[in-house]
Image 1 (cartoon, rainbow, N blue to C red):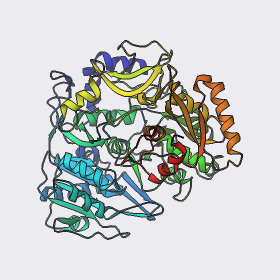
Image 2: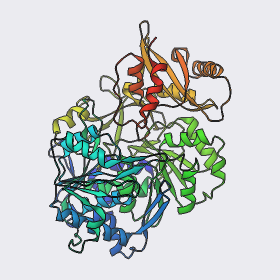
Image 3: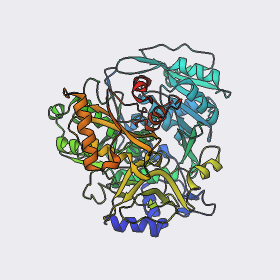
Image 4: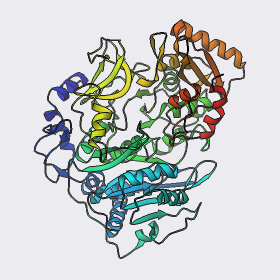
Length: 626
């Protein structure tokens, strides 16, 4: 069936479309319908259905005789460790830890907070929670104590699972002191903390702390069986930054999540049983939840859990080594990771030293894919480079090139087309639909498809106010863009990244695309800074490739001229600064808002999600208004 037929089917008859998709999931009791909109906007998918997500991800494959297939590959260049787990072995370990959680009093609906590095225990803990109907909340490992405390107080976990440390290429980050400090700051106290002791650092235990290894070896703790949960019961809470400073807990259900992710693996990522996907993210982010852990396992595929960086562990060929070693079919990472690889290996010499014949598609998401990065990856790898666009809130791609359903021609700068189930519309300020090529607010007409957020944890009103109040009947993505005459969606960035220069609305993405096309540019960011005459003017910050040896002044002049020629005189940057690095979150997003605040003289706090605060510190002198 063609994409157009599937898409129209999903919008015209969601009950039929998603009812068919739900057959790929094993149900304890089959749902009575696909969609229950009786309590809109709090729509529920698969009412009356009961299931267990862990069973669908693990036990089902064992029951089907695929227990000896590899489920999880752990590759850690920072510790020199490689391990593989079959579906049967991963099921045994998960059932054992689920039994340990149950022995600590964790029951259906209780929360378990997971604060772990990229180690197999993180995957096991997540699946163990799903097995007994508990709700997990994974917090990115190494988050500061204040941020961790805020999430502890909001989720109120019965148990916290953590480790003695995380390991970076150049340092060891001790987690236990961060956790102990967070518990000093938080009002809520868990019953127990389970700690994975790693050789690189030894944690000091308190009375309520338990050792992971001892629990897993205990003969007194029986493994737990899968329990039945309602389709609408929460599977996990994942926190995203809120505009108020209070973390916003996105709630994901069990039934809709399982159906949507299983469908996406076949139709978007074209990965099936026994095939290998490597997702270069972290389990602390939504990409890690969806495409390191749940979707690959729901599909019976093999997933690679990588404890390392795209560069520096040991070099810019790290991802290509993984593709060769494990015969990876689909590689999913961020444009930021590819730009880092491009910066260190601009000619792609390390690509040529590895056998990448297994690789069919490079999938990218998390940050706008600029055409220059798309062109570089396409030329060097010789495979399809497919952008996809989505959010923590949606849980899976809103727009993508559906490689397993109907691969379409790729347009640089576009994630291609809306995915079935997502009724994407671009709206003007007055709520009317824009014409083809006309920019506006990207929205999704309700109901959201399966797998999207159900609400905000403990705050239904905040869910409505944050996402559903701007345009009646629509979910507001917060991103701006347009749809071209061919139906391709172009996402130009957050609506607060739109510059207003003398009454002209300009997208930072347009200007960045022009800058990134220069052969000396590795990555860049454009921000709008206050100007007494024009309201705002663009400023550009550029990181040059490692091979650049020319004049910084000349490069700045060339880039200014390039923007003037490609975007227009109104978009010409007031300054182009060549810098050593750009401040980013740990998931790779450039902190444009923070840089804009600094440039406007605002006392901008250092975001808790920042990867390296030193990068921002070094930019303050460059950005500070004169």
